View 1 (cartoon, rainbow, N blue to C red):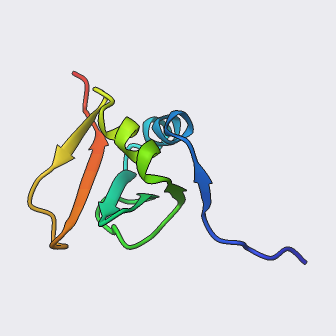
View 2: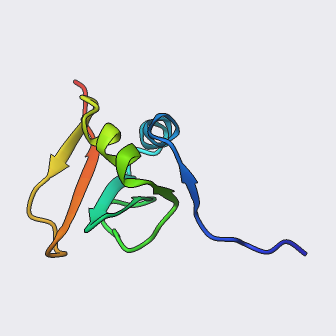
Length: 84
């Protein structure tokens, strides 16, 4: 029987690959906690965790954009830019 240990901590490189492969996902940050949510519309769920320094590197990636006006005060959300 396998025990689910919960989300694992990853680096910025892995996180951007995940975000590109899962366009519905997003990077969430609240205070010094940062995680990848599998669905940007449900930011409480956590698929992956990031250390603050890795999250800062990820936020600087030009493939991501900040989403304004999300429902959770004090929480920020980044998603992959739609390329046309």
